[in-house]
Length: 447
Ligand SMILES: Cc1cc2nc3c(=O)[nH]c(=O)nc-3n(C[C@H](O)[C@H](O)[C@H](O)COP(=O)(O)OP(=O)(O)OC[C@H]3O[C@@H](n4cnc5c(N)ncnc54)[C@H](O)[C@@H]3O)c2cc1C
Image (cartoon, rainbow, N blue to C red; front, top):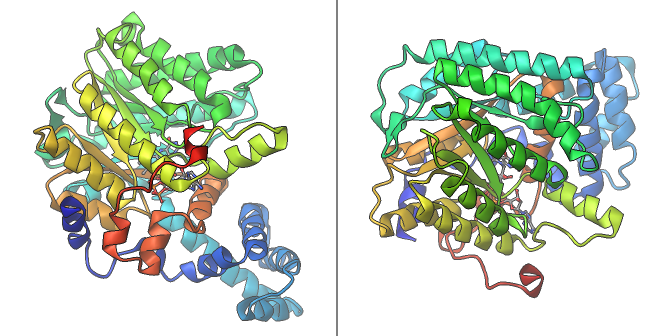
């Protein structure tokens, strides 16, 4: 509680909650009305394909027309859609709205364009991980292009970060130096063949491109982090990463990492697998594996997918169960150091405070704990964490709107969910309640 209160008090005034931004009016409306939410999400999804303002306005009013009881702003939009001049104005406003929303989460169109922001963050005591937007490629050519963009990004970041000022808290822990250049990649973007019914084929196809990226990261001294996606690719991604990193040629580097998703009921077993690897095949590596602990960004997808097939949900269905598991995994990860490096990724003050407090209980001073947030959601938090002298890294997506659409929709889904910490914080739930331990386990949670 004390750690959480300190963190909350360090949030920069005026930017206490990112969900209070001006463009959140639409999101606020959407979170109160499921039909409106669906209409707005369908619109956001088609924006990059619209060719004119008139086209945009027609799509917007087309989707909004399906909302049975439109709130006043929607009725105004519908009225505007009935004349050509109105449609042009409406299309311009809608395009500006979506772009503004996207820019909150996406740092720039290319790594080069993002360098200024990344450097400013670094100067403020905030490290970054660049995420090249793009996922679920459908052709080999697309996968090749993604891999080439990643190689270029590694080089651009490594070259630029060399000139950055020294920031000791961000550059070293008890296991040694931490690379300044850090890139996050998605395996589904490195192969069009990643399918649950033929995992070996996807793994083989992705392996060559991922091996190339690992070589490049090693050569330029960068960190390569492999994100985790939906459950249907989890095992293939985990095996691929652990197998490649155990190869002789990667023994000396690069620094690399993977992601553990606490919303998955079987995540404690996944951690067993990772820990076995650190004391077995991965034991000889010069850089400990970094494990980024998250709750998981595909919750709605996993629930719907399981329901469609008549399966029981692989994810917890009660939020507190995910939160409690997150804390249990946090403790196991922190206990496992120095065999691995730990990154706790969350915007939930309670989840972060718990990690900081547990590290302190174990005698740590924060130097062997990294906290991570997402650009656009963790902006106030990143400063509060840095102000405590702790290491924080912000995940910074880079790319255009088309490539970023799936990412943007996941962030919007989270922002309009009634079960998110940030939504509770924005609603004004008292700090004591926000920092309270997750409730007792439910029967469903124990399943
Ligand atoms: C730096 C960084 C990197 C990330 N990388 C990845 C990644 O590689 N892969 C990935 O999947 N995600 C990733 N995420 C996203 C992360 O998984 C969460 O979606 C996001 O951070 C929200 O969780 P929270 O702890 O911030 O907020 P909270 O509000 O505390 O938690 C929200 C989360 O709780 C879970 N949840 C919501 N409703 C329920 C329910 N009814 N029952 C059970 N659980 C529920 C969901 O996971 C939801 O995202 C990353 C996040 C960060 C900060």
